[in-house]
Length: 119
Image (cartoon, rainbow, N blue to C red; front, side, top):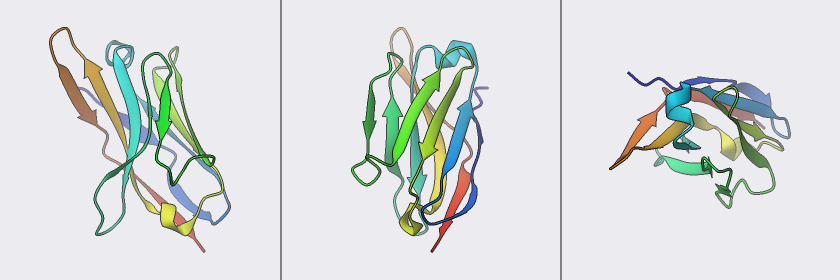
């Protein structure tokens, strides 16, 4: 069973920073685009940032210039550096992997980590 192990959530004041981490097995990581989604209470889950296996990135407009996604292929880990946090960034953040198999793709999700930004 594929596991995505998230860490790094917590409580921070507005303007502060947090770094989320998500680790998985090498066999999955090497062939996966990785990403972070978030879901606030009463809201739909939304894409925050995504990074392909080759390192191309894209971000939600709401986090551009504040968040940075990166991957360490030696550690099979993806990171989300979140700076200048705002109360509206409060949500459960989910790590996501889209694994590209030979003939199809598989989606995997982490269990989520809570990020709370106080005003």
